[in-house]
Image (cartoon, rainbow, N blue to C red; front, side):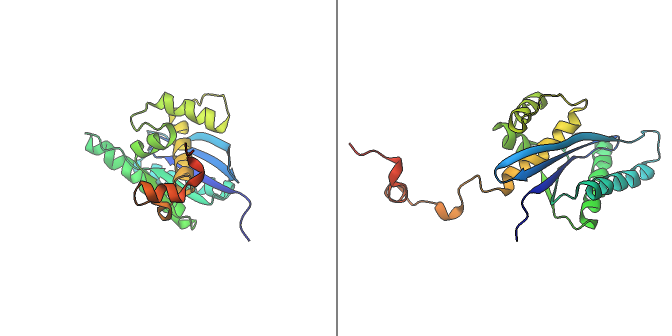
Length: 188
């Protein structure tokens, strides 16, 4: 028997502020459950902070029991130290999900923006406004990391659902297309 709804947890990794977003999918409807950030002390030892990230992500998973886990891939910038820290935070969050038995999906920032707005170069505000429209909420988050994480969850839903035609519907030329789609044309 199939589950009536599923929950997706999206994560925007960070070492001091980590965004998370949870959505429920029921049929074709998407519903916002929660979006917020996990804050960690920048004064804390880096390894203690990683342990806290693992603990808090595990806590989110135990509380909300998501069916899917999606995370934003690190953006490759010029600061190698920042990339290393971000990669560690991402790895620890992934380890928490895998320890809980969840499959992990990773999406690039460009893929997420493309999925939400249709534009891979969209800014954070455009993504946020589209999320408000898709999930029918009006409040602005205190931290954009929260809406970034929500975008990861929605992107995962779009990528996993059958919103795009399957490869079995490929056509071989116009004649084949017309044969497979007779109701889409008017003959004169």
